[in-house]
Image (tube, rainbow, N blue to C red; front, side, top):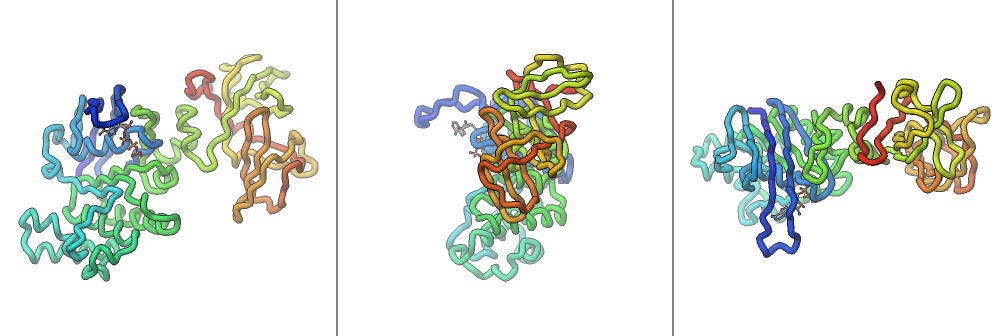
Length: 372
Ligand code: ATP
């Protein structure tokens, strides 16, 4: 098992003339990333942000434009994929249809000339880990999506890789199967303790699986941190709104001074929210920025609440939680409540916002404004 170190990594695709999409800019720009030995990291970001390109360069399947990749202490830039001691599990299962599950799992070891008894020992070690021991005699065509995915991962880990690279391995599975596989992957990685890089665009998957998450946008790393860090302490508006479901509410605001404190105010709205005191040195009367607050930090006050009366615009009942939307000027402010009242559009509620939970972002750049 080895760690991974990516230093100043760039990728620019040359326009081959065959691809309609001309890629003039870098698909990956100055990426620096370290996964410690045994760490599980997720590359997370919207479609086209450069996650797969990064993984493919790490695997040796894509040429590096600039920069260095180390697996353990070895610079692997010019190493053939088969010499990088990696296991690959990509979203397409790529199994050999004429071979049984057993032979599919054993394939790479056979190709390497490992002896039959050793192969058999390893297949029978891995199969129960991936809960595919009862599938060994089956043909791939007989497998469900979840079963195929388990075999796919078994094939990747049987070589005892130093580094396991997974690209959207659960993308073909539907909700329930996805959830089940997520739990299995977590258990498996715990068992084999392999350094893992996991590509996903699903923030829930990244949050639940990874030790650290690298959030990427337009080829640029935005933030690299633990799930708690990226959720509680986002560096910019992009990270704040990408992590969390429903996403953080982000509203343009003008701050006004009132007495010895400041309030967030919003165009065409009576809503006023207290600015946390720690920002007193960075804001002033008339200061414009964006305010972010998570839906669970917006509350419905009781009968004697001093909250602002606001009209319910949307109401969704999701069983264990309810989501309410309130118009604040042009923006729909979302709140989540466990309150069992069935609200409807037009109902009036008293809105209380936990001022101490708000974040401030620069109006132009979206960068987080920090308290001093
Ligand atoms: P997805 O989640 O949709 O797979 P991604 O984050 O993995 O997206 P990449 O596949 O790495 O993103 O793509 C990054 C950028 O590079 C995109 O703009 C994409 O169009 C471009 N790109 C990817 N492969 C090629 C290629 N072979 N030739 C030209 N451009 C490419």
